[in-house]
Structures are given as C-alpha cells and as structure tokens.
Image 1 (cartoon, rainbow, N blue to C red):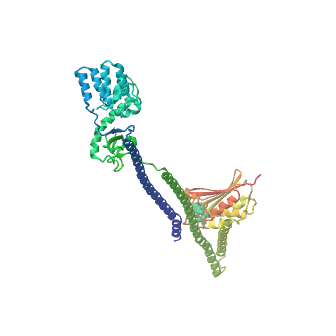
Image 2 (tube, helix red, strand yellow):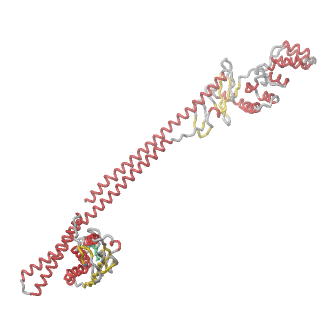
Length: 550
Ligand code: ADP
C-alpha cells in the first residue's frame, strides 16, 4: 500500500508536471506555427499588392507621358494613323509633269517652289539638282535638315533624313529622337553613321513593329484604357491612352519585364488590372520564427532532461529507502526469532531441572552446560545488535591494545567448542606461532571470529568440517574461517556485507554478522574478504596489519 502511495506521489510530482510541460510546449509550438503561417499568408498578400501597386504606378506614369506626347524609352507606341499621304497639290502635280514628262527640271523647280510644305522642298531640291543648280539644291537640303522628324513620308521616314542622305551628314539632335524613327528610317541612318546606338535601336524597332499588329486586336477585346492586357512571349502589356490634346486613343505596349517579376503559369494572379497574368513572387522565409522554435525546443528539452534526471534520482532514493525499510522490518522479525530460540531452550532446561531436581548427576551437568551456552549465544546476539546500533549512531568505541591473535582464536574456538560438538562439527584450528602481536580490541576481534564461526556452522549444510587458521601474510596477520557448505553465488559476494542483507533466507539470521565483521576489520586498518564456490563452501578472511617493528 505504501509502495503505491509513493509511486502515486512520484507520478504526481514528476511525471504529471513533465507531461503537462510537454503538452504546453507542444501547444505553444503549434500555436506559434499557425500564427507564423497566418502572418506569412498576410505578408504574401501584402507583397503581391505591393508588386501590383508599383507596376500600376509606373505604367500610369508611362501612360501620362505618352498622353503628353512624349515617347518614353522601351515603349512601343502606335499612334492613330494620321494620313501621311501628301496632299495632292496642283503645283506639285504640274511640277512632276514638267520634271518627268516634259523633262524640264528647271520648269518643275518653279512649280515646286510655289507649293507649300517640306515635301515640296524635297522635290524642289531634287529638281534643282537635276537642273544643275547644285548650290540651290544644297540650300534646300540644308533647310530640310532642320525640319522636325514628324514631317515624314508615308513610311514614316522624316524628310530631314532624305536631306541628310543627300548631304552625307546627320540631322541635328538625331540621337535624341531615335525612338521616333521606324526601322526603315533607322536603316537609312545606319548608312550614314557607325554609331552603335543605331543597330541597337533597329533591333528594338523591329521587335516593336512585330508587336504593333497585335495591339489592335487586343484593343478590340479589352478596355485597354483601364487594364493592361498581357500578350506574347516574353510577355508585353498592352494599354491605351487618349492624348491630352484630344483625338483618337494611342495604343502602347510595354515589355512586362520592365515593371513586373517574371511570368509563371503556376504563380500568383495579379488581379483584374492585369487580366490572366500570373507572375512569380518568391516566398519569403521567416527566420525569426525558426530561431524562436529552436530556442523553445532546446529550453523544453533542457527542462525535461533536468526534471527527468531529478525524477530518476528521486526514484532511486525512494527505491533504496523502500529496500532498507523492508530489510529493517525483516530484521525485527529475524531478531525476535533469533532471541526466542535460545530463550526457549534456557527455559525448557531450567524448568526440567526444577522438576527433576538433581537426581541424575550427569544429566544435571549437561542441562546446565546447555543453559550456559544458550545464554552465551543470546549475549552474542544481543552484543551484535547493540554494537550495530552503536555503529549506526557513530558511538562505537574500540579499545586498542597489543594483542596476540593466537589467543583470540583459541578463545573463540573454546567458546564454540560446545555448540560445535553438539551439532557434530569438527573444528580444525591451525595457528602459526610466528604471527606477531597486533594493536586491536580484544572483545571486538573475538566477536568477529565468533561471527564467522557461527556463519560457518549455519551455512555448512550437511558438511561437518570447519577450519580456523591464523597466518602471517607479509605485514599482515590473516585469520581464515573455511567451511564446505552451501557457498555464495558470485553476484551475492559483494552484497553480503551490507546491513540486513541476507542471501540465504532458509536459515534464521538478522543480517548483521558480516556487517559487524567488516566494520571491525576496517576499524583495525584491515579488511575482510571472501572466496566462495556455490555448493562447495566458503572461506572468509580478516587481514589486520601487524604492529610496526614486530
Ligand atoms: P545472517 O547470517 O544473520 O543472515 P550475516 O551478515 O552473517 O547475516 O550474513 C549475511 C549473508 O551472507 C547470510 O544471510 C548468508 O546468506 C551469507 N553467508 C554468510 N556466511 C556464509 C557462509 N559461511 N556460507 C554461505 N553463506 C554465508
């Protein structure tokens, strides 16, 4: 019952808090993870929103600039088709007739001079040149060279560029207006200059011109003034804007890579402002959450480890205490039993003597011997218990004096002679005469030898030979008690010296005899030892240092 209480207590104080701690820790980790996921989702929405906003604001700026009549770099513009065909002017018609049918360039030049516009200037220069008026032609071309680039023919080639071709020079500020030129004009320019910006621009213009036809188709499908419709691969964004001065809408296309992350079919949708467009937005990793998890895990493991280790120590202590308590209670019943046996014998023989008187002289003597020896046994037992109690309280005092161990073993053999003979034991005593004296407590040494002899009797089984020996062993005196009895298993041999420990429960005993022998040997600066083979017998020894100088 007490066991169960202790186990219950252990569970309540260690295991339950541990489990609660683990459960709480796990809950925190899970909650934290959920929170982190929620935060990541929110962060993603914010991220996508940011990408969309950035793109829309850049595109809005481009639209505005185009509406204001600018041409931002990298943007394809398809302006509403202005009729570039020249207004048929009667003077021009007459001039052409004079130039090509009448073959009279001078006459033609007169007609052209009367016609307005840069186209007429170009024709005039040509006619002047043909008529041999080179200076006049050059003057016209030089004037044309400064004409704005939107004065162009039906292919979009500015007249200024034709003049430049004639003069083998470049129109002023031509590189600032490169993006206004179609590919055809750019090829003409390329023949006039080796500048690398021109081929670069040609590549762009060809790409842009390829895109232009699609813009018209998209304008029919989407409200391009509100949305940016993706098309092509790599994708472009198509939009439209009305010029600030009014008029038909201008279509424009911007490479998506200019304003948006790369497209990705499995990516994120950017919403109705970019119909059908999905882009790749990298997921953000959240390092702070990871760090706090690692910290939480290690703190939890540390707390668990410490708690479990403490629990283990507690458990070990409780187990030891339980074992000692059990042995103590066994000890009480063993001692009671041990006391009862000699007391019963004493009472029995004393009562017999009283009843029979001294009729039989021989019996009388025998009974008295028994009473004396049983009371001696009783004293030894009581001495053992008292000594043990003194040792436990640290009160045991030894009286050391120079002592002949030969005398000690002779006295012990004498004391045991009667009980040995009664049980049919043969005791062989073998004492070297050359063993020097030791400094020892006479009563304690005798008690130790008697305890070993009593054990030899108790654990002899059916064997009846016991040997008691005294030798010198280097600087030590060695007392040995040998029996041929039950022996001791190797695993038990170290434990039999513990208090209350009893390997063989079939024989009565208190489990104190060897504890005292060991204590006495240690108190004398010596040690006890045992050699034993189960079923063959045991030899116990006490080694005590001899007196120095002896
Ligand atoms: P007790 O003899 O009262 O049980 P001891 O402390 O004298 O207590 O001995 C402890 C245990 O050692 C015994 O219970 C017994 O099992 C074992 N033992 C002691 N002496 C011998 C021996 N000579 N032969 C076999 N076992 C022994």
